[in-house]
Amino acid sequence: TRDNLYDGKWGTICLGYAVPSLEDVTATFYKLNYYDGANSLYVTEVTELEAGKPYVFEAHAESFTVEYIPTDEPTPAETVNGLIGTLDGLTMEADAYALVNNMVVNAAAGTTVPANRAYIDLTQVSTEPLVTAGAPRRIGVASAPTGFELNNVQKKACKVLDKGQFVIIRDNKMYNILGAEM
Image (cartoon, rainbow, N blue to C red):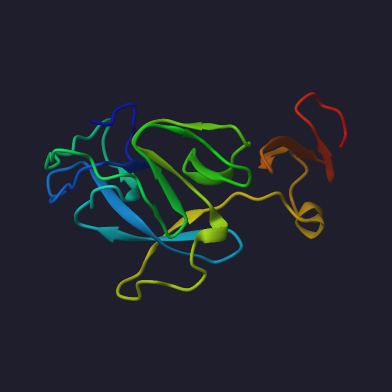
C-alpha cells in the first residue's frame, strides 16, 4: 500500500514480486521510454509490474494497494533504462534525479531513497523512443535557466534546484538560500 498521495501525484515504485494486474489499482504505472536531452522525460504505460523492475506511477487517489504474487525469495531490484530501483533503500550517487513535486529534479549526492522506490540517472536513459506504439506521457525535467532564459523571465523571483543546490533567481541574478549573490 502506498499512501500520502493525491490525484495527479507522481512517484516511483520497485517491488521484489510481480503484480500481474493493475486493473483495480487507483494509479497508472509507467516505464521510462526516453529523455529528450533537454526538459522532458517520456514514459509509456504498463498493465502489470514485473518483479524487481522499477516504475513510475501517477496516483489517482490518496492511496493505492497492489497485490503481488509472493515467491520464496524476492527478485533483486534492477536498473531499467536509467530508472534505478531499490528494495531496501539506498543513497543516491552524484547527478541522480528524483521525482519531487511532479518534476524530475537533480538531487543532492547523499540523498536517501526509501525502500521499494527508485531514482533516475538521466545519463542512462535512452535518447531515442524505445516504444513507438501510442503517445508516451511527458514528465518535466527541471533545469537552471540559461542566460538567454534569464533575460526573458518575468521580474519576480524564481526558485530552482541546480546540481542539488537551491538557487533563487531574481532580476537576472542568482542567489543562494541565504540570499547571497552567486
